[in-house]
Length: 240
Length: 327
Image (cartoon, rainbow over all chains, first blue to last red):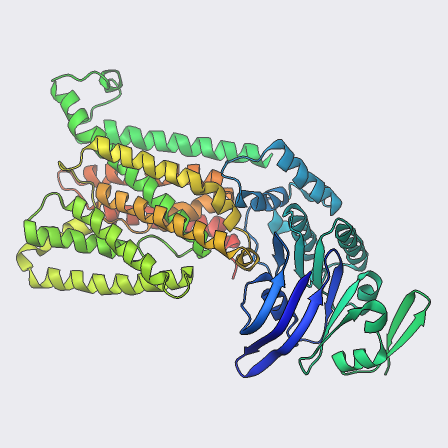
């Protein structure tokens, strides 16, 4: 569980968060939604400790954290496998990885269905494939808290679904995942817990049923939605 | 498949290094020839053996130390700053060394100026690292502070040279770089320090393979990131100081050897470690051979030869493989 108490954070003259209180459950997929500039990325950076709150506190139980930024600069001239290997040198003082570590990398690559690309230079991978490679990096990181900033933005629809299915499976192992997503229907389909950042810098935080109401969505995005609830299913349409 | 290709390139680089070593030791105005290979390890009193033992071996050894240390130091700086222009000399280390050298000539008429250069380099790099650590350490800040220290010390050097016309020629000559003889610290101690430098570098090679990941991605593990970065920079400062001790001030090697290596091997620092040692030492060994033979009996300052050879070679590589430097 991550607890955020009385958080205040401002950039220049713009107050992003004021008296913000919220909780993020352990072992669940938490989806962060909201318009551009509402402070979604800043919130991930606050949780990851990259930026410090100006007031208030963030209490996290996570032992190991993996943060995937939105824009990534890749090293050059190394293969996909070598890219994933990089993470193991964080703790390793040896020049070569053990058989176990190599197996772990291979497993992560095949989970992301990139096995046929594992010896391809990352310079030659597509942006969707690179994003999948970064998810593989998150898998091998052994983190119990994974923060993803628009992890599927460059993927095709099929890959988005596959990756979200996979991320969902990770939460069953007790890993907490917080992801910023812009695809509202995929969010509904896979999210367990939701954070909505409004234009007025208010945060709405709730479980699926209570989060997806026409009023909440109007407050977050500023436009009208039609929310159709059909037993367990929730369908969302934009109204013109 | 890629691995085999890299092995072939490393082998070629190794052969180039051996050829340069051969030229540096066995070729010269008094051409000593291949037959001396047999005599090489028998210390005799004949003039040929003396030339080898007293002049050629120590000189080749120092060229090798200077070349590999500079190339590795450049690789370290570029790896942690993620900036291909970062090199040990831009960051104030060279001017610290230069100031030490100039002061030693000015105050003591010293022939052992390389020792002063060594300490000058150590002191200025310590200064830069400490300043960069104020409030919050950042590598970009370090480079900018290095640049400022560099311009400050360089101006001081120019001033000292200008107001001491009698000694200015000696000073200019030394500052252009060249391999020196030094009686204060023996070659054995230099060898020891070189080995320490190599081991130190080797220890941090896996960490460079970690630091090659996106810097924001590494940010959530700040503690580790800064620890490794500072350790790597200290190693770079030590290596640069060693190179100053061996061959005075030689710019440029710290950029071209690491960047050519990167074009050949990509950012796997295990390969780059070996490649930089081979490329850096070949370049200095060969340049030193040219420096002392081409207009014998005059010696061209080594630093100038390195520039004359290094610049065209670097531009050649950039035209062939420069695509990897995208904006």
